[in-house]
Image (cartoon, rainbow, N blue to C red; front, top):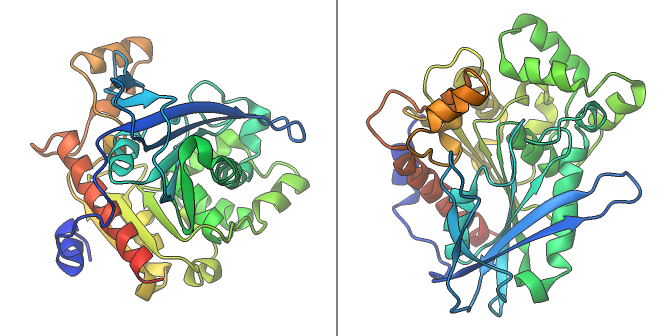
Length: 347
């Protein structure tokens, strides 16, 4: 199926089974890692009973933020958990629109900056440890589940991972997909135009035997019960066997706007063909670009981005459509919310 309409017809226009939350809390924490020297910046949005006035989180001259109350207490009871993984050069705020929407539906939502591939940290040594990205997500799950007094208690069998771009690769890895560096290298010889190949070459995550072994290892976290990919990359390096046997429900959302370096047919659609049909869904949004999954841009943002780095203004562009980015994101949020609700109800 290629359109969101098909999926909505199959699912029905349902609403989340979770309660509508009027206020959400927000906390930012650094997770230490003395062993690997990989401290993580983690943020968490969660339902809160607070009556304090919210403030805009991650709001700047380029991107619109979202309201939350810093360090607010959590509401009682158990809540499903969603962990967000950003793309290359991204950061924890990239899917704040989704985090806010899901937290208002009753989810605990955590996000993390992945060292080596985040906005302000693209150091070569950390970047080469691509295999650490799913480990980062596991550490976030550990941290949230260990602190119910801060964020609320987690429903153990309702832990989902949502990833954009390279974050989509991260979500699949933690769900049980296996990456073959040699397979990916051969594929990039046939498709050198793909941005996935260029990013991979920049990160150089298989430059030594230990790195290659770690990248090809089983990085699954059995606590993860569902995954969502948003216009992912690097999926062509995942083995057919591991994709065909992926043990959790998977929603693959693709940007359908024409793209030379990340075409849907060579990434998201190709992945969807290899996933188990009974537990996976594919949606291609025709007027979404790769950047439609980033926050909405403010007036003048294109000029500011291009002034700082010529060409970066493309971040604020969507497909050839009159629909604003916020409307595209409402569609994506509905698809994800329905998918997570149905996945939970089938356990």
